[in-house]
Image (cartoon, rainbow, N blue to C red):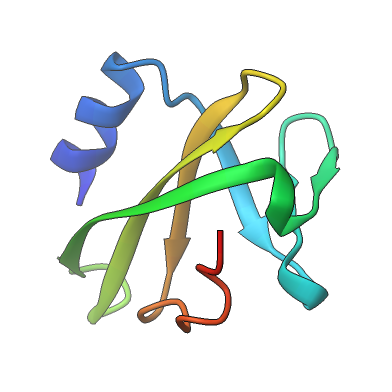
Amino acid sequence: MTKRLIELHGKGFDADFILLGNNYLMCLQNSNTFPYQSYSILLIDEVYDYLSESYKCIYAIEVFTGEKGVLLTDGIVQSSFLAN
């Protein structure tokens, strides 16, 4: 997992995002929130996390404002979330 995150950071995906309700994302660095119409999301990989002993999905996020970052989830994001 660390290797994939380092690769993405090297490509400018340096923000960290979390999922909120109603398909919103929030950037952890600045607390900005974004509705699903304002970003693109791409599944990069599903990797095993040895610390939590579970699989994690790594997504690349690009926001219309130019911010780029990553989203880690415990599973695949539902297709309704990926509507854009």
